[in-house]
Length: 451
Ligand code: NDP
Image (cartoon, rainbow, N blue to C red; front, side):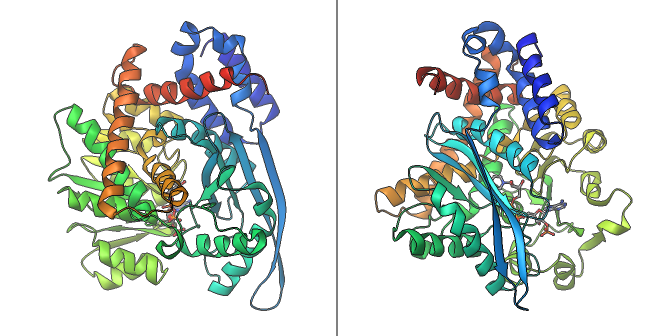
């Protein structure tokens, strides 16, 4: 890191020492920006790095609701409107007990560059709450979502800020949030994406992040004259991204053999049965032990029974790995094991699933490594396609949306790859994605003045 970026990083560390995930995300980006900061001095002159690491607006609020026993519950709600230089704020809402400012600032910061890379006009944001939907009744989830929207509605709108789903926020939650927004504002607008098809949702949005990650992996591999066909793949997570990643892997002739949730891992050597996975996770909302009940030939390992807990998935030999669960789920030791076992491709469906050491190991090994902000951008890109359909009062066919998604993922790969080459880092998609995402936003910020 050069002196300008280093100074910003040091200031940030002093100011936000209690936000480790945010600092990690910034460090990863700043480390790769050096070539562009060296050649284009205007970014330092306009203090773009100092400005881009601070959210434009941070909203935090109390969320109070009543559970099924009549007890009052209190949660904390947030929305981080990070950067609107190239479009309205856009990014998901995470509902998980681990949610705090550090997690949401890391996610919002990443979202700026990811959204820029899609080449669509969308700014970066993230939000959520420390509410845990797990184990709650539908009525409790509804009351929470309504209470959350009672404050959030003041800050969002179809051309202001358009939230979407993320961990813990699926179609059910988006529906409850949308209903309350409509009630409070008397306006029927595309203010949330990931909506039900009955009220403005887009076909292929549910599938988009997982499918997009596979399209991205295919682009990386085609560039190396390789492919996923006939290859064994490992996938972590068992939620939205992991499920549709598995589905698309089957469709391209690969074999996904693992999925994980916070309690355990399934290894199914015959290939993950996606309709059973959907039944377990989308319909029954059960643990993966239920998959084992329905597919007795699969192996189940509980996190508590394995010394390295959730890391066991990375010991399964594979050609390609798809971390699709959560941040920092793949560390340097996991990277070493994956590489030793012959893994040739890592594609990140989750946000920041690899620690900085693991990222360095993949880049050094020169495998096909697709960093999250490029590889999982299919979700937000398709959200923007949903916004486009809402604005034009249209609904496109599944194939039309899926075709656009595939093209967007191929273009993101080309953009990251050619930018890496332009700055003397051929094959390094971490550098390529960060520089390409940064350049567009930074130039827009300069053109819009200091405001
Ligand atoms: P879901 O809530 O649908 O699924 C998350 C999955 O990961 C669940 O199986 C969950 O297990 C597991 N998980 C969560 N936390 C942990 C943990 N600490 N240890 C082990 N497993 C864990 O979320 P999504 O699939 O939507 O999101 C997954 C990742 O993809 C996140 O990083 C998200 O930010 C990212 N992403 C999502 C997009 C989208 O369109 N949904 C778009 C771009 C990125 P359990 O069920 O037991 O909690």
